[in-house]
Length: 338
Image (cartoon, rainbow, N blue to C red; front, top):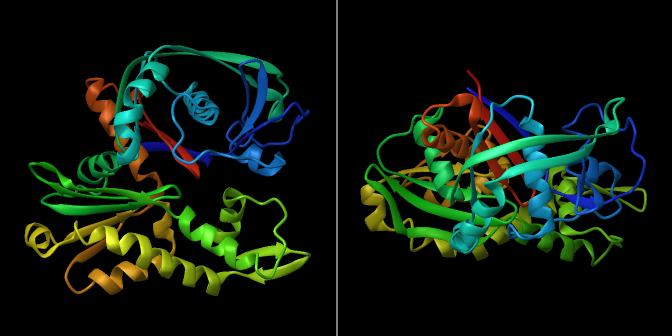
């Protein structure tokens, strides 16, 4: 049903010749923006000196604009114009950025890029006309995907989403979402920073930022001074601390006795749910009073929901409907297959 492409949300200014360094466009995103060349996504991760991304950036920020262009470029050859795009923000910034994002997205985009990273071509450009734009809270996108996507969830349920930048929650009912259960707080970066603080007590990390350490966080080890440092036990400890200090206190006013009488099913989504140590924390607290559901491909759920929302807005035009999730660690662009 869905065609999904995801890539790192990192960017970096670069004028280097990177001919034939990538196998395809997804891994070779090099975009011309405001008279500068930038490497984006996986290319920035592999070739950049210090690739970066602001946490919860605004539509006025360079990284946000480059990631939008990257996402649009990836679907340019597989969609019918004009496009309908749905994107979103954490609940904490949604109202602030909604109009700005709409203004930035709803126009004709001319995207210039260097195709020599993966082919014999050099500088090329594509034109994409975006006619309809909807901006919704990210957690609402997850809810749409649960109800209208493969999961076909019904009834009342909680949605807990944990990504690199934010952790969010909501109680979704057949009649709509319950506003007072919407929480938006620190994401996995909180735990990664704790891990960095622990590592720095005994190791020199160079100039690695949280985004670069996140790669080691995922793998469970890091190479420092030509030594393999096992991070699994340290990761388990910081994930438990993150849960106890950030997530659990924020859920006390959400998953209450009163709300559990309305719903006892909890869907866990977002990229952080790949960590079993974190999932175990949810099981320990709620396993006896709620039915926990782990979502397949939790990091792509919001983007799927955005695409389904675009399908509704476009009046059922599958080939023109796009979901674009500009994440703090990963950007996911989703289209709908016939």
